[in-house]
Image (cartoon, rainbow, N blue to C red; front, top):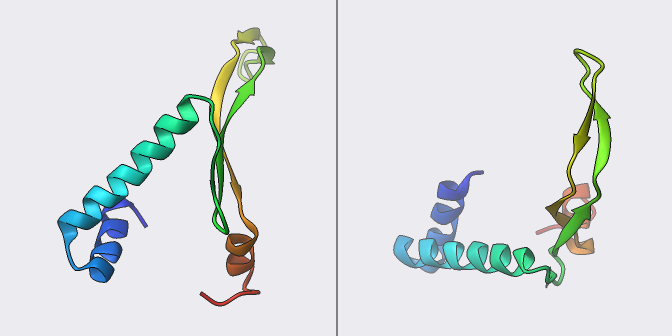
Length: 94
């Protein structure tokens, strides 16, 4: 499912495609901005989003075998909640 399909699915429930688009955009923007600041976003039953720091390291180019330095970086991290995990595993009905 892509963003357009998600908006269409929500529009079927709320009755307006414009309202669904605004809601999806607002949720995604808020999660992205909050995680970028280094704060954690936890949605009970669904999961949590947080910022993870990766340290600098050395890696090898598989084609040449040359060593390269990979700089430190920050990446988003998602951990699924128990309700989400159970639904995917088939132990819980939606």
